[in-house]
Length: 373
Image (cartoon, rainbow, N blue to C red; front, side, top):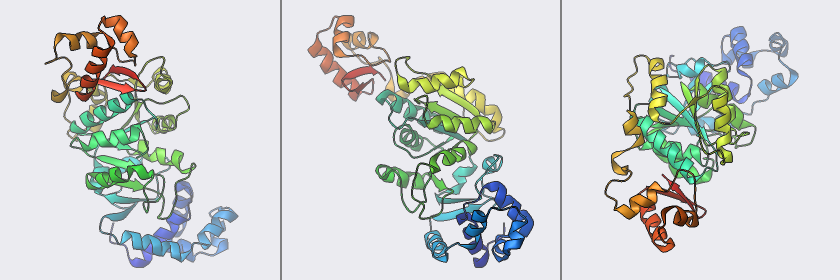
């Protein structure tokens, strides 16, 4: 796409702010050829596209102060916008039924061209679930997959953090305008993503986060990606909206199972029953996605690498009492009293060993319960 004139950019930004469905924008551009012609059109000309009165009022009522705010934001060196006819607009996203007309971004848009895996899950995960998400994201990033998520609390944040420890970076898709970071607690994470990835949104500057924006945001997360992986999601979780979009878009869906006693595993189990692939290692994902990536190189991580990284060997270097304790622990949370019964070690020794094991990343604690990491 040739460089936009100031007038063309101004009118395209106005079209973004009309907040029209993609199908309507497509009809308008077919009818009038350019954004500039749309805003020069009369009411009778606009009626030929079968717009509602509310849509016509939106087109004719855009406040130029909002456009000035967009232009001021875009003046920053790390900020930008991609329209659908830009060669850098992600092709993967153009293939869905309702792609965004434009994407505002902060960071490096080259990450949008990489093969991406969406990773989503609960905003209030267990400690074990959060660690699993981070570990998977790191392994998959090191295998060459850029990890895409929604910058929310919980699993989203863990996935971004894990991906930043890998080589392929991460993309954060947010629902609000990029004049602010939501949630505020993830501001530093967002800054790190802008340095080793990309933050994107279809919402113009000044759009504050609200409930109705998130389901639409989720279609972009899945649309950018060749597959979606879910870690810990309740049956009515917003993460399942992302997987529904992924299925409608013809993308792969993966789910990590959990304990039958964990309500946050029920959404994943529902997905698996519906045909999502059950995932135990990163290799389970890579063997499905490698054929889809074609010529883009992704290093195949072995199951052994996935289950065990060099800094996290399970039992090596621990004396017999620690090994005994670990052998009597499972991946479901358990209290110290139960561990005393199973291992026949005394409670004070177990408490001391659990602290050491937690520092060695062998054990995860939550609410007084412990599980293998």
